[in-house]
Amino acid sequence: MQISNSLQDYLKIIFDLTKQKKFARIKDISKIKNVSMPSVTEAMRKLSKLGLIEYHAYEIIQLTEKGKGLAHYIFNIHHFLTRFLTDILNLKPEKAESEACKLEHSLDIETLERMVLLYQYLTSCPKVDHSLVKDFKECLASCERKNKMPDICRDCFVKTRFPHYVKQGTVKHVLLKDMKPGEKGNIVMIGPHLEMRKNILKKGIFPGNEIEMIREDREIKSFIVNVDGYNTSVTSNEACIIEVEVGSQKEQS
Amino acid sequence: MQISNSLQDYLKIIFDLTKQKKFARIKDISKIKNVSMPSVTEAMRKLSKLGLIEYHAYEIIQLTEKGKGLAHYIFNIHHFLTRFLTDILNLKPEKAESEACKLEHSLDIETLERMVLLYQYLTSCPKVDHSLVKDFKECLASCERKNKMPDICRDCFVKTRFPHYVKQGTVKHVLLKDMKPGEKGNIVMIGPHLEMRKNILKKGIFPGNEIEMIREDREIKSFIVNVDGYNTSVTSNEACIIEVEVGSQKEQS
DNA sequence: TTGAATAATTAGGTAAGCCTAATTAAATTA
DNA sequence: TAATTTAATTAGGCTTACCTAATTATTCAA
Image 1 (cartoon, chains in turn green, purple, cyan, brown):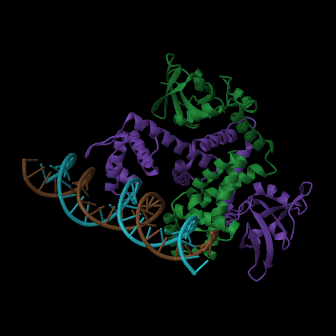
Image 2 (cartoon, chains in turn blue, purple, cyan, orange; image 1 turned 120 degrees about the vertical axis):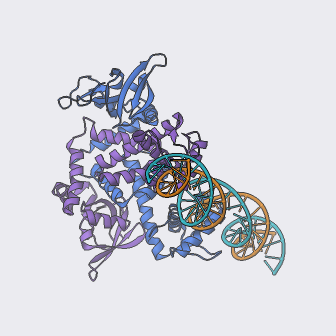
Image 3 (cartoon, helix red, strand yellow; image 1 turned 45 degrees about the vertical axis):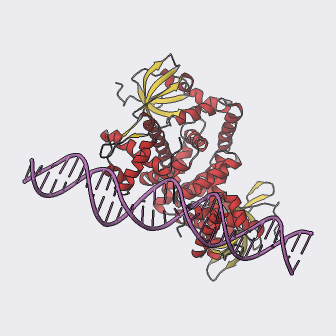
């Protein structure tokens, strides 16, 4: 059954309401979804036509068996995604809730299936070092608290600060700030400092991008760089937490 | 700048086209986005009004500096998400591509930021056992190839098959098939068998859900269970790969 | 049991994002 | 350079999902 995102939301809200109160009313739905009552009425008629709810004008709203099945499915996807976002990515509950709302409509069952496996893998698999997820979450939490690079991650990052740290033969990792004009490479990591990370991402700089150092502009304390064909600037501080993999296979113009 | 998903898509397509051909035409955009040419014309007028592209009737389309910046950002989010979906979740490239398209519009910068950190953590952090992601991917790939539980995961799963495997004092893990009517618990893991996993998820059964065994129906070789208040059925085979955490804190009615 | 308050619906409108059919502009080629 | 083909635009429509203002049901309380 293919129904629009909006109708899915209505169904989910009705499911939630009927669990608590045994029935749903137009007014409550309107309040929760933050739309006007006429909008709800209209949506109810559509859901009723689709055989998902039992609804007649001025009467209370209840799910049909078919509606219950679909709502249950949608609700549980939402529930799982919320768990993933809080348990793995350590988002705050309200934030996770709203992000899950947006995600639940777009994900294919196949992707979802893999996310479930990843979730289980990280939280349950006996092979996975349990400190892994704990460390990762602690890192995120720490970023947030102190708004600077957390101790727990400094170890990881420090390893990349040896400019000649060799990974496999000819590939070396350097910090963006140490790159010479014309030097190119692929971004492998952006340090965990929360605010700086956000700002770097907002400039369209992600791990995996190809980056070329154009020049340093000391006036504005920034580096001018070219990221996948687009010029942008990075502050000197930001350039200290961007790690680039400079390989010998790339020609350095 | 807040623009609609559809306009973001147009911008991304123009960015991509201008990288290859130095300009974009209505016809090409229409073909890529799979919409009619008049729809493209209309969208171009909107983008032009927003100052994101340089466009006059019958002329070629080019991004303004402002448009380039935004397109670059959108494009790189897409690029990163594709990498996450292929490198971590091991989706096929085409699938990852199309899923990234859907995801890129819904994710908040904060969630994205954490996904980037998780990606880096799993692929680069020296603390993370490198075999972890490799194993996880191998597991996924193996599921797909043989469509049965892969050897690499059987070890994990087997541990849960000891019905009295005790985790922390009073909590024990059992398989759904071994639960008695009236017994309740929380789903902690669904075995890796690909097709069965998908079918279980489609029934709205996810890790984290509360599940209660109602009864076994030998006629249809299924178990009737209640998942978070909703009754559904699970085949005997499926019940063999659903692991439930049965705690003493839950009363068993 | 009848008013007042609350809840729900009609009626009529808007915006985004599509569409088809018809027309016009630009490019190509004979 | 005129005819033909290709590309782009107008014009007019549709659907979804909203909205406000006005009206009608229902419920509650005096």
